[in-house]
Length: 347
Image 1 (cartoon, rainbow, N blue to C red):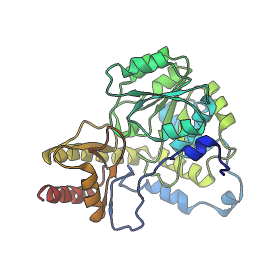
Image 2: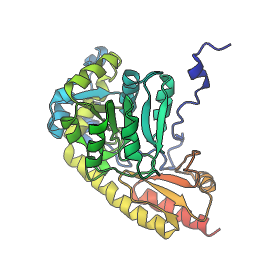
Image 3: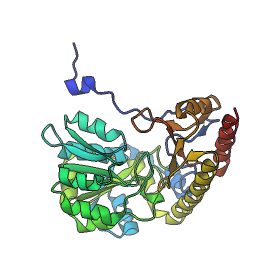
Image 4: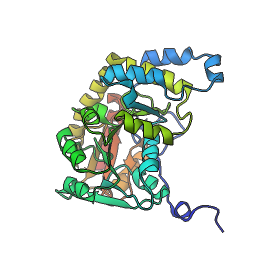
């Protein structure tokens, strides 16, 4: 006997990346920023008052909306605050999908999409990226919810904004553009949220702003969509500490830009170093690279590295069996990884 709905009982669930308990490791498996948050963030943390913790948080996170609006050049009523980017995904799948309203997305991509669809008993339309006409197929599917992760996880690829604008114009439903990694790309789609009433952008402070532990993200869309999404979110979905810290982080653009520039430079160096070790590494627009193991087994490399307390990500998923996703670390962390890969290659 089970107490759960059938779709919950049968669901495998989302599998987060491994979180080692020890600290003396090289952890490059969950796309965390290797650098600390802005000093202004830590100052804000130290100044959190007991009175602010006693009270419920601001339901809409207005101080963050105001700060983000100034940085992004959009009205504050175009922003919804969420408990990480995943919260916005959950809200959107709850709002737009059910057993009669499918979701569509290209694959391989962020594996949480299929889990959220299953929770809603929603059918999915999965279009392989390897199909040259995958954008046309998404347009033809015209699902109630179409999701494009851009830059994409776990491949790191990027679709030009003009092509996603064409897609938005062809869809009758919502186009949700997951820009969790957009801080590391050369362009974003914020203009699409201004131009199209059916576009929602997802942003995260976990990557570029070094706040994965706080859990803060936000959505950008026209006010009519924001009003609908607010009906679906939890009453107080973002806590007081997260709102204060996120506001401090997004307000310190100089620190943010310097960190992002350092990661992008290290990413380009890692691409060249991994290619020299006989990995196939396509251009990445994220804070990670996807490396194909040409002469060795990716699963075995993943295991051998873990034995050395070096953690990268291996996905046991179709099309990813021979690949490793490697987060960009500090130059020192990356050197430890490269030396270990050199040793493994020499076996």
